[in-house]
Image (cartoon, rainbow, N blue to C red; front, side, top):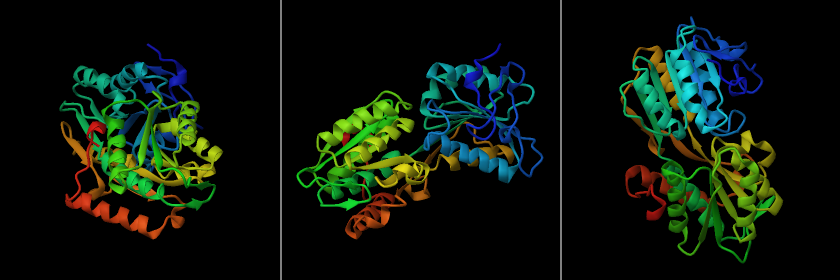
Length: 362
């Protein structure tokens, strides 16, 4: 069995070499992803990324940072697979699990859309260790890692809700004096992205119950044009700030913000850095430490402490999520806004603020 060679990028990132995947060997090719580091390379890791691929400046790139750190610090070897669509997940997971040259000690599955395929494959390959990010699979050979996205998104919403009620200008953006309106652009609708929306909306309403929140799900994590269209509609309907949880689709949100002279908020990584050309409109990013989750699971595998059957939750209290202000615009955000956000962060950690996970409860 062979898979379409377009699905595989080996090496460190998009500069790697596309290779074929055979049933006995998994992905092949040269480059940093084919091994390295200071250790003996006894541990092999297979990475199955989310749709949208590497170079998204967000979710997948954050996951890659984790495996690259493991290569550097732990001496593991790794190979990478980039699916074109959800239907590819099962085959790619199986390719790593069935490989004998090398044998993959851990297969890391990035993204909640992999859960259905992994539920079947974990049962099919009971001796294979798997990791899943952003979902939970109930199996002894799967370590599940989730994040309190709603907590970090609450802080984003509070910041946006406070700023839209003010006359605020910074970089290439400004708020509209006659509007108190913000927006949320999601990728694929579901429980996970719903947590982002729920937290964001709750934070906005906590700041000012009169602020309107527009919501649009594009239906794809790799559709910048769709993200741009959705955000343009929001800005044209009065939105000052649009927050995205949409992978590479969010690149279109940033383009729309620049086009309309408004603001945006990134996700997963500090996108004022990873999408530097849009730093003049990116107020902040809701960072998810996917890199830490990937690294921690690999480290546990290396140490013979794989947390199979466990679900690990990472929130504000352990820096699993955080609101990070933009490199260019962060210093311009008024102190009363940043102080209010900081206070809410501590209140969430202390349990004084309960953040909803369902948009219907926000």
